[in-house]
Length: 250
Ligand SMILES: O=C(O)CCC(=O)C(=O)O
Image (tube, rainbow, N blue to C red; front, side):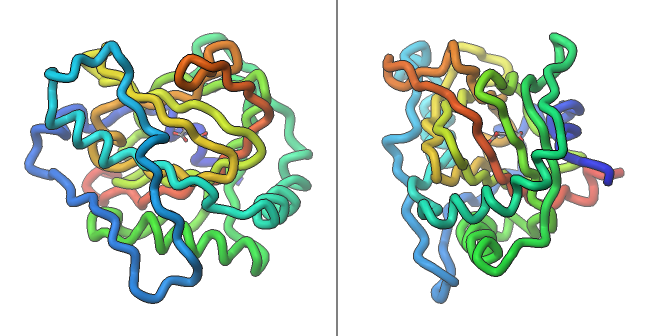
């Protein structure tokens, strides 16, 4: 099976001028009237601008990134978490964690693509679609989820997902461990935002968070939230992405 997974990270060709472009995107999430399930609300206290970003600098971008990076705590229940892990584990167990060359974008990972969910887990994935892919800009989601299994010593370096493989929205369910995701402005590195990706939360990244900022998942040594160390254990992320725009695949 050809995995698209790591290509998202490796080929970092992206729309660096998104913020000033005419393709600004409406990013309000309007959940559909009749959804398959309850849809937890985003908790703004889980996304924080770091002190290196002065309050008076780029106020519009500040507001945009706080709108465009969302964390929805308790998106999956404990039972749903166990069920998803149980379904994925046999496939993941057949692979070894990759601790590759030092300059790779990601260290200590194994990955797969998955779509053939059992009914319980398919229900969770429907909830992802109903929550994160309802805006016109989100477009269709790719049919396969990208499953990224990060060892406790693993981490993901700052990158922007290649537009060739991924459109407007990246939505990730976080299983087994909490982690900190750091967004950093691609050209003004002191503009930084941390998001606490709690275990069983879902994050949604779109618009400015997707195109103007790099994102990274911090490794254990650097993993801290509001000054307190955040122990990192093995973490599974089940990531759904928008299909790329056809103009970006040529
Ligand atoms: O592990 C995650 O949730 C983030 C993965 C990531 O950075 C990516 O797939 O671009």
